[in-house]
Length: 124
Length: 292
Image (cartoon, rainbow over all chains, first blue to last red):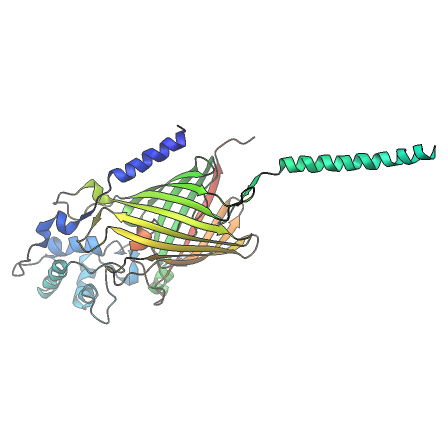
């Protein structure tokens, strides 16, 4: 067998070996539990993980898409208070729907951010 | 005597005929049976999408790709040029038909590797073949940390795969066109409704403007995009500038991502709203195989 055929076969083997059909909702069912909205929602515990997953890849210090930066408290607070953060993630009319090109964020995550803003958008 | 003179005069012309015949025969022998189409595109990528072309055997192609920020960033962000996202890759030709490549993108810190094989090669001559068919397959590995470190994260969740069949033709020296159906698979998606497999149909073309310049364009359309109501399919328009060993591709596109997964799902902007970005691909080839 020629060397290049061997290389091809091995690479192809690696590729199909770890092919999976997973989704987060099934893999991590605890995340789908009914959200307890009476608790206090915090910036560090609730908001930052969501922003890091959904927003900061495009809205960071080095890549300020649309002039919006969401990787520090002051900027996040600014966009939380002027309504653009919630308007965008809730896909309200008049706002650019975010995450851009992707699906709407999970309802629980939108609620977490909404409750944090309603609680005063504190740096907690 | 007269006859002898005529004969002597004729000899050189006969021999010259014979020489011509011999030369023709020699040329015919040297003429390849199959004349393969070359340089349908100037590089291994049209702009975002893989092209019909492979690098030749023993040749290493070092590519640097840049995508800047949205032009909507305005003058303060120098119309996006203040923000840059980069990918660099190495493609190497194991044979004239088979190439392997690796790359790394800054966006989502993704590594990718691919194999590209020319199944059918357009040629003239004996049993002519009107099209080139290329199979390209690869893996994308997201190395950015998992957001939720407390849950049990799987390594497979970082991986995505792509398979593309590129069917195209170099119509003449100036015009090449290709169609490329592909499947992009992600091991982990958000919920049951989000498809793990995206089915994509791509088109790409090149029109040569002069010896050094060519207009290039590519577009990819996701067929099962119901889950993403705001999805913008990637469209890129640009020009190729050839300068000796380098090929510059300057272009405008609506995508930030530069590998097969990210180009579709990388938060693409909308052309109709002017949310596009400038970018360039730079290619430099090195011949690693000693040629006689």
